Image 1 (cartoon, one colour):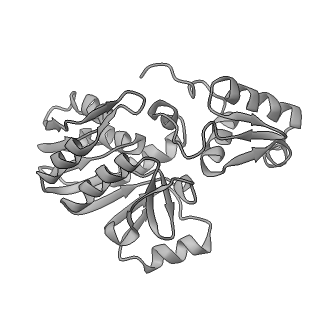
Image 2: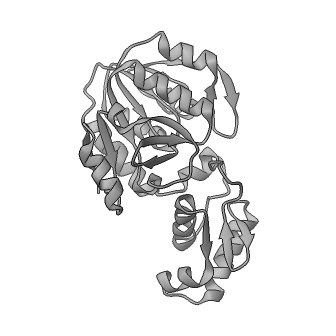
Image 3: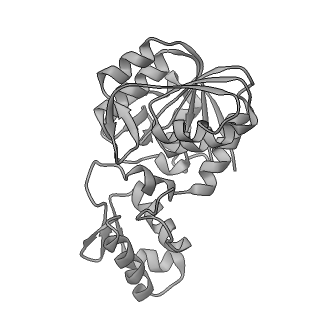
Length: 259
């Protein structure tokens, strides 16, 4: 993988960046108290994030660099990497050899592709270029890449041609990520991303969402689908909010925690 803005962050800086993915803004004093360091230390951490374009300065702290937009794929790989690997391994535990798969957008889905090395005789369709690159080295995976509009920052293709591609197939299992989760269901940052994810859900016998707990409450503006459209959620931890836990309990899905 190429060098990225999120590469070589300290553990604390990476955790601050992960918190920023869940909140609109962060303040210096609460961060200093939470991490048990001085405000000056936190200010230095925040300066690093701002210098790399991962955050924007505001009085007393930082905010997201652009409201309503997700980080690029490379930056998202730097968020909760251990959780994503654990989630991916748990997803793959329930994927047998010899199945057809649709793999969607996002860094969590790339982690699933990496874990698929233990499976054989797979037929995979995807619009995720990083997934295609990972599976190019798989000894027994047949991969079809969707047509569509290339997004270099996200390393995927989207658009009406991509939606039509997935509509022409019907797979055993679809694995997708999302930009955010709330009590109503799955969210994403871009209407074209959401349209592609809906196409995956509509043309699969089993639908698996791979999403770490930081996705709960993220301010993504485009609705993908209700929780009822997912058969299995694989995550690292259950959400802390009682509202979100109640929504999961009411949905007809299996919730599998990897940590």
